Length: 343
Image (cartoon, rainbow, N blue to C red; front, side, top):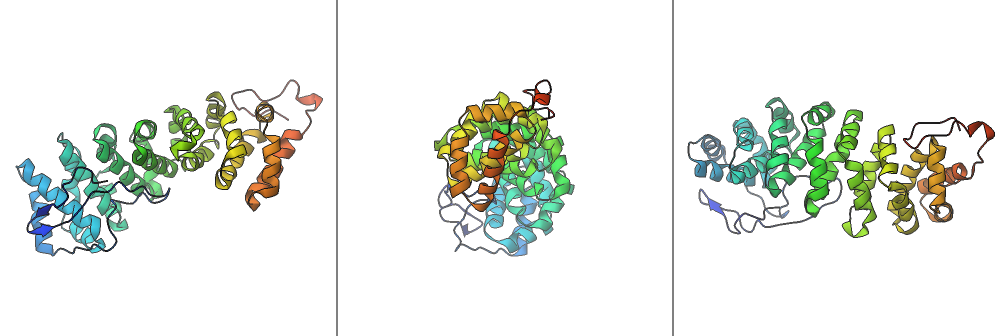
């Protein structure tokens, strides 16, 4: 993700080789800057102390150099992350995230991300007030700052107590925006962070209100986006809420989900059949919509050829779709907003 760093950067007589990388990682691997596994650079405490002191220099250029050096030292070596934090770097780095200089902000955000890979540091960051500055970088930073702020918030969200704090700090809306408009790296980072945050009910509601469902449906409809699985996981959390179920229907999600059952990968089919089952369990209207889209034939195939979990869910969903409508439900069927009827 170091697209703007020169290839042979050196500072304080230290060379850092080629730093350019745009590597994409799996759903759960939003974890700091990519670097070759063979690279290791350990710095002594006197060098780190000097760099931390330079973060508070009156010279912006000196601050940039120090922040970049710390960013790289934290990127490559777990021992350095502990040393840098213990030298008092976290608070001045948090201050840099609020800088109006985009490059200085980027270095601050990325250094914080790399330091956060140590759980001890991540806990200290929360108490140092890092969440609101990261949300600001997520809203207004350059592309790298936005992506790395999303990853840093993901790291902090691994601590359950932080998830509501992050949501209440306004992170959900810019994460949805990054999911919608970012490059592929940004989309994946945002989706991963949203998946973690949406384990909390409040954040699921916030995400729906921020328009996430429309974005998810569009990305899942485009198999070329390489986002079907990731977006499906997020949607599977959102449909736990009545607002999420209603939004999936309103945004035209059912035809997209049925198409995935027809032509998606085995993993995608397993994710999607679980979503459809939740949509249909409490709603006769939703069952009718799913059946009208021609879901039963591909569900039958999935019930015979899918994974054990997918087969079970497909069988349950087929039974629901084929269940006859009783006379008592004619006036009490579910409304299109997802409110349960008495079927």
